[in-house]
Image (cartoon, rainbow, N blue to C red; front, top):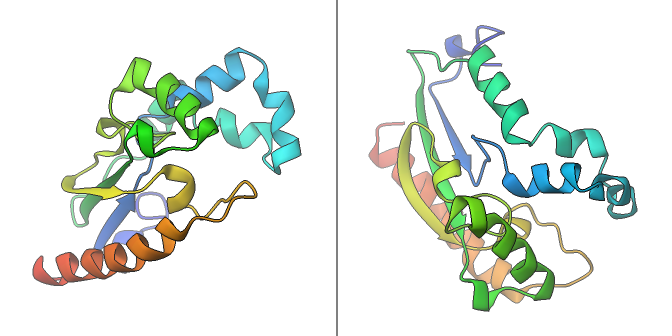
Length: 159
């Protein structure tokens, strides 16, 4: 919207949270190993995962440069491996092999875009409120405070 639809006329800043700005090696792994055919059982279209591969995201970034009149900020998610569930640990390990510290889907460095404002202590699935059938009390404790901090930071930055 900002680049292609003159969004800079109404958007002062864009803040992203745990966004795979360089794609996700886990998405690529799912596609490469044929796991994408199982995603429908989780309610995910395989095409959505293809749009998260590093190759696709690189093309998207090249076709959609930042607008000079808009300020860009980012946050990354990070949760230690030992604080993850069984599936989360598996995902963390796969992402860690290629991207280092991560939130179980997006590497911390891959979430950096524009001015990096820090990390939130949460797994990616918590940040997008995707439960996989498991409730997480952690999400309700951490995220409201985090979003309050995001708003505070934006106000401090003049937005």
